[in-house]
Each structure stands twice: as C-alpha cells, then as structure tokens.
Image 1 (cartoon, helix red, strand yellow):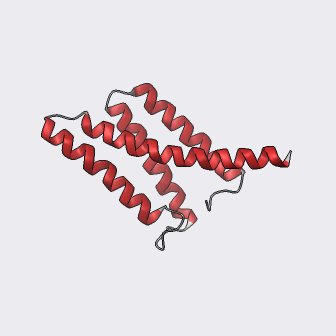
Image 2 (cartoon, helix red, strand yellow):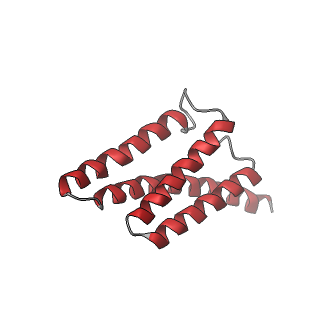
Length: 118
C-alpha cells in the first residue's frame, strides 16, 4: 500500500512537470497560429520564453524568489489556465479542455497528497 501511494505521489509530480512542458508548447502553438508570418514567429518564440522566465523566477522549486504557497498556487493555476485558453484560441479546443482538466486534477491531487511545496 505504501509503495502504491509513493508511486501515485511520484506520478502526480511527474504530471505537474508534464503540464509545465505542455504549457510551453501551448504558448508556442498559439503564437505560431497567428498571422502574418513574421508576427507568428515572434510570438511563437516570445510567448513561451515569457512563460519559462516567469515560471523560473516565481514558481520553480529552487528559485530564490519563489512565491509563497498562498500566492504561488494561484500563479501556477493562472499560468495553466492561460495555456488552456491559448490552445482553445489557436483552434485546439479539445486539447485546451483536456489540458485544463488535467491541470485541475493535478492541483487537487497536489493538495490531497500534501505536495503543494513541490
């Protein structure tokens, strides 16, 4: 039983990391879907870069400027919500909804497993 719980906790942290990677891809996909082409290239590079920089400063576990939990959790959920909206705005509605559901399930499990500091 303990091994199963440890496995579930590890899988949930893995899901959070996967959500972070998918968010980067979602912002790049949204940027690439814009027009004209020059704007699409700029947004496909800049939007994920802004996400990575903000996440690295305020949400990354080893960041010296990591937000306290009461502000970091809404920040993280807001970033994931924006990624879901970006997918929907780019025409990938099913992917955006699936991403939002996965992020919500992950947040609930992080709270249930006491992993909000991770």
